[in-house]
Length: 261
View 1 (cartoon, rainbow, N blue to C red):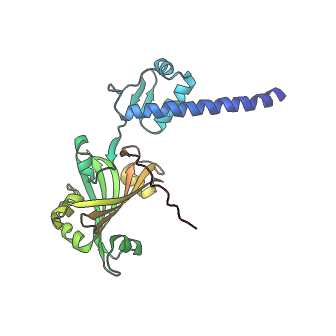
View 2: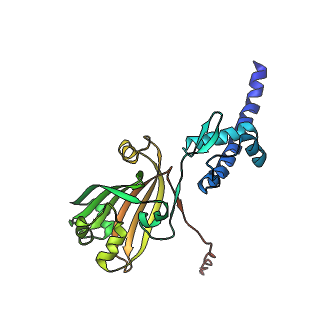
View 3: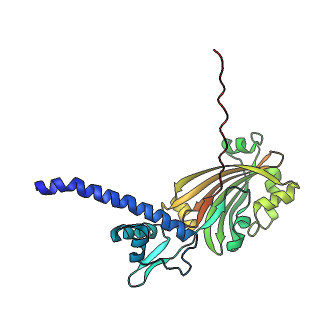
């Protein structure tokens, strides 16, 4: 018993180091999978991965297991590890609708679940800058890429923007494009925040994912070129289908201001 007790800390530390290394390998492999590096759909064999990553076979197997849990690959006995799911990049450095963003990957269609005029919560009134007591248009859509659900969009629009859209083809057209056509103005900028959430049962059913699956929640307030807010959205993206990308630049921080006193 004493020998087992003395070995436990060493074994625990060894497993921790292997788990750390497995995550490192999985991160690099995930990048390759998402970048389409494995054109045939099959990852290299375990022996080759062990050599390329200077990792043990157990470490490589743990890394592949992590990717399998995420739904990116499938491990088939006697066949190997195959890519079974693709992710699509949704850029955050350009203000564009989903159809504009993913046009090269397929056709975006929208299932309009709700389109109505509602009395909004105070937070919506404030974000859109509409007068207290004024109603707004509420739009809920499940958006699919070539028939596969990728997002659940909850959208609020001021009446003068939203009501004219009631008769438009919202199943096949982006709201952004319709707003620009209606107002005769281009969209200017959007305030965006992103967080990770788990799918509630209702969202999971609409997006065809398991309950509690990882989703990317984007909150976005879009403004016309003149600064007026015209579109408030809460968008749940499937974490296994979309990846959010942008490019950041580093600028010198402003010099501190020294005040006498």
